Length: 480
Image (cartoon, rainbow, N blue to C red; front, side, top):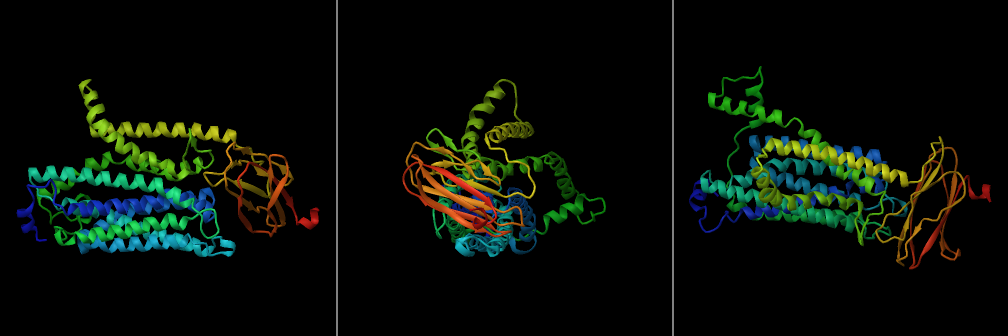
């Protein structure tokens, strides 16, 4: 739509040009796709692909770093070459391709429906592709929405309302996806007790809907021509060795006015580095808890839902109650004070998280610090299981009776056996024992070769059971 036509058409009858709702819908779907994948990513890396917790954390935060690096590249491309609309459209297609790759990576290609190296390579490539897509469009969508409004008093009022809806759509998408994706991953497919493929394909579908919504309003968008590389111009203007002769005094004043703001933003990377740990170490810490709050079961990766809930709840509360009350008491909450208070609360939250982890560690069975040993760990991976197992078995036969729920449920049990010593075989037997001590059936009975890892799943019928585990070094023939 030509800009001159739009200026005459901005409506007195509606608070916003109607086509901005396509942009808001696009943002909701895109944020659902982004957080729908991100919320379960650390669990996927650790418990599906088999990375260690430290490796998964490194991959997770590398992905987040790329997601927030590529906005710089996307902004340069939009300002210098393609414009906002084409940049969003092209990189959204790249984004969708990455989401589809992520879905395919969750289909187990190995023997016995286990993931193999193909899954790992696909997942890492998918994460890089999604980072390029989501990062590249990040600086363009809100800016394109802002272009749809006049630079008048009425237009600025309309723009303020647009950004309120825009920000609400971001948090609504995050809220819904963070709640739904952990539930979807617990579905069963490919003869496994999990289904990450479904958990990833739903965000991929939402990303497809986001592209459709964005294109649907394209005939009405005001598309301003590219204005050149603003970031490059800024660097040249403020750098001592830059060529300043091409800029007017007014432009130089505008560029230099940004410098005090940059200084104020120096602490923010530390805040966001801590904030992003909600999706990595905090989620992994939550896997060590039972997750029950009253009668409600909270999955480890659903813990991140508190952020959008608090944003949606506290924005009006603070805006209309807390800040006016503080101002009435003579305390004016400037943006800098708000940022400082938020960072202090973040530091306090990590102190509390440290004490929570100490309490969790105190409840876990200590693992002996032996070298060249083997371990078997029992993982309680489903919400409706009757078992929680927090112990490890080291080079001896042990009977272990974990907590038995008074509720009778059907569910599944997952056994992961990892060989640490590469020089010997070991044999694992794992039985279900009912409350009368009668063995119901054998779950695992096999010899694992050196250097291999076994990840077994089994279903058990309705009823209360105890668990009996046998762990032996060497083959069964050597120990029987």
